[in-house]
Length: 118
Image (cartoon, rainbow, N blue to C red; front, side, top):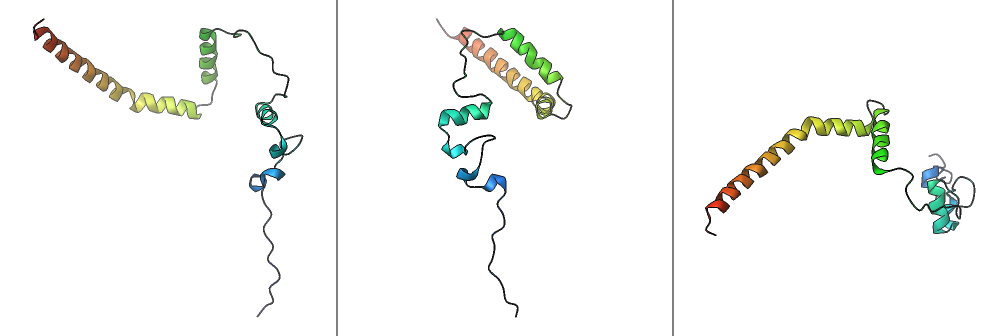
């Protein structure tokens, strides 16, 4: 029989470290930061540097156009384009059939409404 030495735990990877040992990029561990500081570090800003704007810098239509341009610039296999492609391929026809059924039911209900006495 071989003598077995003490068992040594495998090293922890960065995502399995206890919260106190995880470090946000420069600075203290996340557990020691206040919630505002932690939130600002997640969105890339510094605490206290937030500037409140009185109005939006772009209108709704220009933001929508920018969004469509960003979708155009995505690679062909991006998840957004795959989802849109899947919906257009498999979801539109059932959606049209459901709308047709609602219109048919609406026509029948209107015919019954016209027959009823006033």
